[in-house]
Each structure stands twice: as structure tokens, then as C-alpha cells.
Image (tube, rainbow, N blue to C red):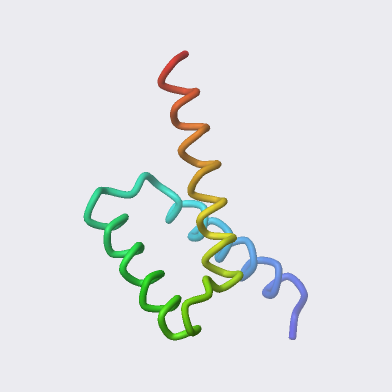
Amino acid sequence: MNPRVIWAALAATAAIGLAACEKQGPVERAGEEVDEAVDTIKNGGEESTANKVDDALDEAREAVEDKDKKN
């Protein structure tokens, strides 16, 4: 396969991923919390590593948004 095609596909995927990182509304956040709760129940009451990472990213995003609001 052509390396240029591969790089173009990776760039397009990254652009779509970054565009999807916009602010979440309250319903989206609630849905995410429900999904995490279901995953926790499926794991026998232990929060999965993916959920922990997702929570840390959410906290970092909120901290940046709060800082932007103050400035």
C-alpha cells in the first residue's frame, strides 16, 4: 500500500478524533457515567483501567475549561 495513502488516512482519522473532542452536554456526560457504571458492574465492582483513564481525561479537560473561563 502507498505510504502517502496511509499517512493521509491517519491524518484524517486524527482530525476527526480532535473534532469529536468538543464540549459534552449534560445528557452526554450522564450517558457516559451510566456506561462506566455498567462496565464497573461487569467487572465485579472494580472500575476498569479504561474508565480510570477516561475519568482522569475528563478532570483534566474540565480544569482547562475552568482556567479558560477565568481568563
